[in-house]
Structures are given as C-alpha cells and as structure tokens.
Image 1 (cartoon, rainbow, N blue to C red):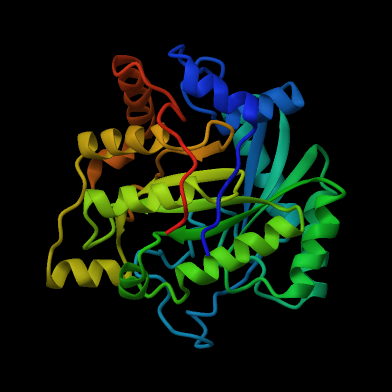
Image 2: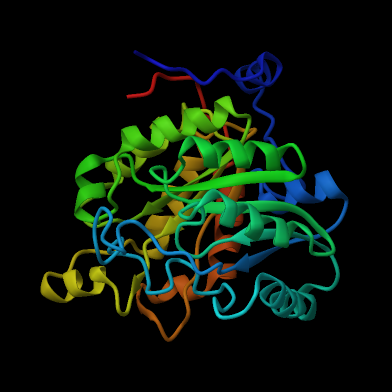
Length: 332
C-alpha cells in the first residue's frame, strides 16, 4: 500500500507558484533555534542527560556491541554522568550553557543510549524529575523504533498533553543492507510502524539520518531522503558519519578502509536533501560533532560552525531553500 504525506494546501500553492525564497529568520531552512524562539520568545537550550539506560543490542537481548558507529557512551558523549542524579546533571550542564549563551529556557534531552528501554514506572519517574526542573518547557527523548511498547507510548502520550514533547528515532538509513551491516538491529519497516504509532498518539517525532555510512552511494542517501520526505514527522536531524575510537566501525575501517565524505560533498548533499524536505519540518541539526580526542576522521567535522556557515553561504549562492523542490511522493 502507498502512503502519502499530505501538506497544507496554502503552503503547497506558494511553493508551486512562487520563486520567492522561503526564509526562517536569517536562514533558508527551518532551524530548531528559529522554531523555539518563535514558540517561546527567547533562547531555549537542550540539556543532554544520561539516565543510565542501555540498549537491546548491547545487553544481548537482540545483539551485542551496539551500532558500529556508536561510541561507548551511546551517542551521549556530551550528556551528564550516569552516576549523578537527573537534578545534578541538569544543574551542571545548565551552568555550562549559561556561561556560553546567557539565560534561557530548557528542553530536557534524554540523549544517551535508549531512553524508553526500562519499566514504564521507572521511565515515568525519570521523566517527571526532569520536567520539575525550573525553566523546563519540554522533553526530548531519544530511542529506538523497537523499544516503544504500547504502555510506553501511552505514557508519552500523557506527557505530551502536559508539556512540549518530541521523540527522536535513530533511523540513520532506510536501506536494509546498511542497517544490518551497521549492527543496528531493527528494520526500516519497524521504524515506519513506530512512526505511525507515535503519530496516532499525537506525539511529535524527530528522525535521525547519517550521511556517509559505508557502502552507501550518494544516490542511496538521496533515496533515504526522498522516502523520509514523504513520511509524517515533525523534525529531522542530519549527521555526518564520525569515525570514532573504540567503536565497531573503527575495527572495520582498520581492516578495510572505506571512503568518507569530503566537506564539500557533505555540504552539497545536505543542501540537496533540504531542497526536497517539507518546508514545515523543523531541522534540528545539519551536522554533528564528537569529542576531539575520540575522533579519528573526518577532521573537518571538528569545525561545526564553519560547516554551518558554509551551508548558509551555498544556499544563498544556489538561490535555493528548504522545500524548494519538495513534492508529495509515494513511500517506497
């Protein structure tokens, strides 16, 4: 069966009949910073937390070793210490944010490992602790598509009625061969099922993709982007593959080196993806960063702001913007 993502008719007509670039503040894409400032009228920080979870393909439930690209910290390299309470982590990281950016409001971000992989009572307690912190206006919960049983979705639905909530699903690619090669442990079909169950519960979803996974061509990555453009989600994160120490991917690379995207290749690919992405979808991230002492390659990913500035410059140069070439298309 073909499924379609239907867009608001008014915005669709504007895109089809106008060559005027869409802008969100100073950007040619709908950034998370713009979305949050419009919603709350001020700066909103994400506070990354480590609640001490694990993952089903680390603890032996479905596999061991975790996703090949994932660090020993389960994508929570910048999150707090799991030995500290949620309150202690929150206060410590908040103080760091304030030194960099000044005052603001907060999204409590359960980032490290799989943040729905625990008994529902334990999850409710941890989420509640974060929501009670002063200045918190919402929760972001990173998890896997195969770790959303009905009772957890019911809990998330209750929370979404109380505060701003989004669930981050780490899909990474829509290609089954890559999902298997990277030891991710779930399928694209499982992701789609989880996405639609969350949609039915009126829970907002942010999907992660990684560009540059071993064996994937540029067209493979664009196929994933086109598939995701047709799906009903509210946000997206785009990451560059980081080759990091103490990962399964490092072992693979040492045995048989594979090509990594150059900075220019990545930037052009990001812009091509933005062009076909629905204009009302919030872009939570356009690149990622990893600790300098953990990164093997590519080195250019250490200079995050330079990459983001170059994306802005080339969007202007190409006279393009998010959604310029978007059209409703069937999911493959």
